[in-house]
Image (tube, rainbow, N blue to C red; front, side, top):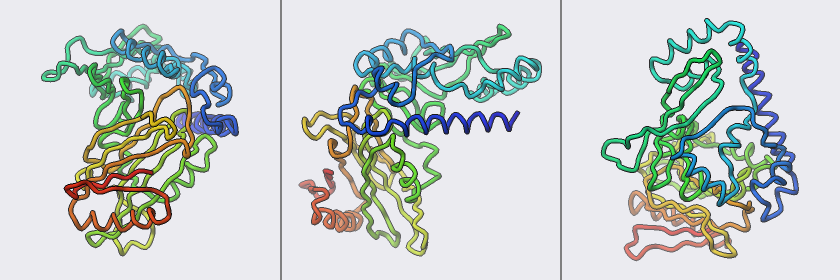
Length: 356
């Protein structure tokens, strides 16, 4: 069963990659619709329902507004994901006692992985009737699972939904997968402490991502020495599959480490803000205020896709101290001389505003 699961997952991943890679020149055209019927066909992603996935009124209203404004129909997209578990569903029918028994044992901890052991026939995402104590606009999100044997289970999604801010997620991301959604401003972004932190950064990551035809992004690495270590502030902007946006990341490594593999900086090392806008009109796609962070991102769910030369990334960096500021300014001056970017220093000298 494990072999079949691995085969299924690998096949599904490869099929998705191939489908997006086949987007080719059509997706490179600036202004390509992100999620209309033509784009679905172009990206090889026909939205054929395979799962029974629904949302309660509170979440459904927010997702409906997102669809109306941007064309992103998340409920339909979720219901149309590849069937990763067809072999396991078949095995569950053959040996229901084994799989449902494991599910019931593991559900003691309300873990989402345990809930899918029994291969649910349907999932309904619901918000608890009462808001989180002390947070009048925030509601916990549960998943009501229904199974072929008629049983049901409610499990923790590890997420909350805030009706005021529109944020769906938590510090680790939805399902602890590292990404949250802002359903009011219509963008996805990395959570405060995503699991990806442990992977740091190396150039191979960009070599893999940026060579995919479904991604059209530029990157800029600003390297500088500080506090006896090699530091790097890296910027990205462009089209990421069916979204447009960018990233700002801060990394460091010991000067003695010859391999260019960087560790993620702690969230407390600097403050940063983040904005990606359409250069021609100045219309912002993603705006995030200053926050202590090592990797701030934003991927706009908008009607149209934009390529790197149509986007402007702005970030405000608050260095740890004067020494870090001077070191980073040295790297910025080199890029300014090339005409790559521009930057200014705030009147109090504490902040660097970068425009790329």
